[in-house]
Amino acid sequence: MRIVTASEMYEVDRFTMEEVGLEGKMLMENAGRAIAEGIMKEISKQDEILVLTGPGNNGGDGFVIARTLYLKGYRVRVYSLVPEEKIKGDALYHLNILQNVGVPFHRLQNGELAVRLEGMDVIIDAMLGIGTKGALRSPYAEIVDKANKCEQAMRFAVDIPTGLSSDEGVETEVAFKAHKTFTVQCPKESAFIEANAQYYGELEVVDIGLFTESLVNRPGKKVWLKEDVVRTFPVRERFSHKGSHGRGLIIGGAPNMPGAVMMAARAALRAGAGLVSIAASHHLISTIAPYVPEATYTDLNLKTLDIDSFHAAAVGMGLGRSEQSASLFEDILRLANIPIIIDADGLYHLKKMKNMLKEHTAPVVLTPHFKEAADLLDTTVSALKQNPFSLTRAFSTEYGVYFLLKGPYTIITTTDGDQYVVTTGNESLAKGGSGDVLSGILLGLLLQSHHITEALCNGRFIHGKTAEILTRHTHSRYDLLASDVIEGLPMTLRTICK
Ligand SMILES: NC(=O)C1=CN([C@@H]2O[C@H](COP(=O)(O)OP(=O)(O)OC[C@H]3O[C@@H](n4cnc5c(N)ncnc54)[C@H](OP(=O)(O)O)[C@@H]3O)[C@@H](O)[C@H]2O)[C@H](O)CC1
Ligand SMILES: [K+]
Image (cartoon, rainbow, N blue to C red; front, side):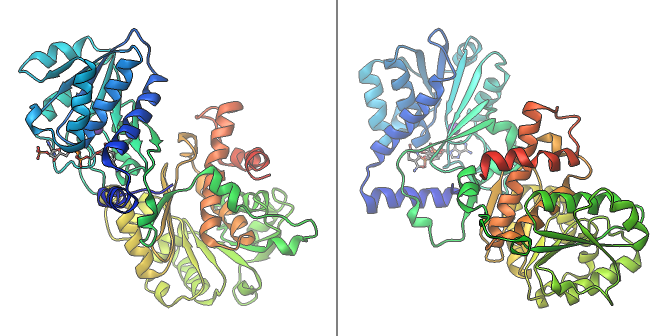
């Protein structure tokens, strides 16, 4: 499912109308109908419903929603925040129909709305959509603020909550706080920015028949969905053997951090890796081995370890931050000609030697959380949270790496600048060890997949999905351990990737 900026959405709109020939009025009818259908599932006929409308096509969608609800017997009225003379084109066409049908229609008068808002059970925000520029002007800011204070009301937003930008990088002062947003055709970039989650509420995408083909040749942003996992998950052939599913190497395991490599190895095997080897400090091997008896072990000594005899490696989990581990990491990066995942302490060391990435020819996957990523990109966490798409894309294309920016909305960027968002999971994953398990799963899938992007998206998807399944059935969002996710992988794999 494509994610768009406002300008991309306008391009899709133009293409559908001018080149395909679907009229704007009809698209507005489709949008309003689809959103009204969605809203009707959440409300009752006793509810007092208010639709707030603005000057543009977002308001036009609101007119169609109001008419649809009215004709189905709902108690609905429309408040326009602008005089009728300001309403033009397709929105005016639908305003006329609204008035011909007899839906109660009011133009905002000073003070009136304050009274009206108070008794409302449902408030529908069709004030501003993707045409919003800058901070809200009066009276939008005041009305939005009042609507947000109506604690008893269910609040729905049309396309985007009024006050938000469609694109990343824009700070929000005041915006409509929706319980649920029905977005037209494609989710907008801003829906995946952490600070906006409180405004969007739940997000539902409604199909209105737009043609997204006009965007095909641009670097894309997409949401990676269950259907993508089902379509691309590696198939295990009947006559395959352990070597067919890849030999993976996990390098790490400083003496005080045995858990990280253990979990990563176990997760890689649970995700389907054929063979996993752990290269760790020899003091550690006897401690770890009983916990992952399926793995093989080797002393972490680059004179004897042949990295390229493996199909892929993960490095950094529990590697340590000493001078000695920095030089070890540098040697690994110089020597490895296989795909390599760099996490945790590996990312810490990489900061000082990131130019090596430009010379490195084999694929490199970086898996930082926001703090690690901000350090690597020489920016702040807050700047990265505002602009995660553009900043990570710039880094990926400049350094030629795959970048998996870990978070509730994980953004995976390819070396070509294509981006995928994976939204599975919940707050139970915010715990030590989660990253190690994810790295292990990613390694397991990298070993089995033809495409790195698919391995990363699928790996991150099943990691989050497993947490969702476990916290629905056997665990709470407090107690779930990173290692529970490893042991929960079978449930996900049995249901999603049969
Ligand atoms: N293909 C589609 O995506 C379809 C989308 N639909 C819906 O249409 C909107 C986009 O409609 P558009 O008319 O382009 O834009 P808006 O409805 O967002 O309104 C823009 C006007 O709002 C005023 N404005 C802009 N910024 C501010 C601000 N900060 N404060 C106050 N007012 C603002 C401005 O008007 P002025 O006259 O005041 O200058 C803008 O002109 C999309 O989101 C969908 O909901 C179609 O219905 C179907 C196809
Ligand atoms: K809106």
